[in-house]
Length: 321
Image (cartoon, rainbow, N blue to C red; front, side):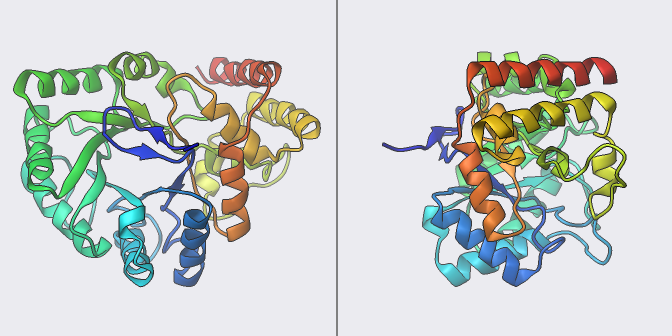
């Protein structure tokens, strides 16, 4: 029996875990990146998620590093036909940003070149661009789909109002439609997805592929009360470290003792059980981590365990409201 899940209205299907590629060329080098990619595909993984901007935020990088490594891996392994590549456009690169028609046309070609492929399976608008009319953006994406450069399009970091507007524009003008959403969503950060986006995605049949599924490592149990937060993700992780968030870790500890699952596996299993979620995105820096994450995306929690986690998670939302 296939474990693949339909990804909303994109026409694509994905395994229960999407591999996050933001770490390639940032926290792990070429050899380790290749090992992680090999392990992911060997374990049944199907979709690799990246972006043109990965990892311009790292000292010495300019963007495109992740796409470049993935492209080299694809060519080296000859795996293009049995993996799906999701990448994005819209965030600030050294030579431009946004979702104008001209920038999209330029960016897709540079991404295709780095990825060493002639099509992208899923192309995301990485963030909303209020300065560009949505009809211009969607028309540009529609041209890419019709040209065969992109199989399907999706949105990331959109509000419910703007996503709803985009879907209406596509319907009214017979343009390519966002078939999936990539929001930030996890046990200790629910506020954006909970504010109308979840209901909209369910109503419109969009797939949902949440990023920061492990809260940049916070939900792995790596960071505990009173301990200093260090490492490349220090600034990101610190925003999760609230009293109620540490209470979530306590609940996860109890469930780990009951189930034998690791903290990361529990975080992924809870996400996978939420209404509307297709598959979470998570990054692994080693073969062992990838194997752990894939097992977590396929794991099941009891109704009581899901309820306890949800209650603790809702307390974080109240604390940070």
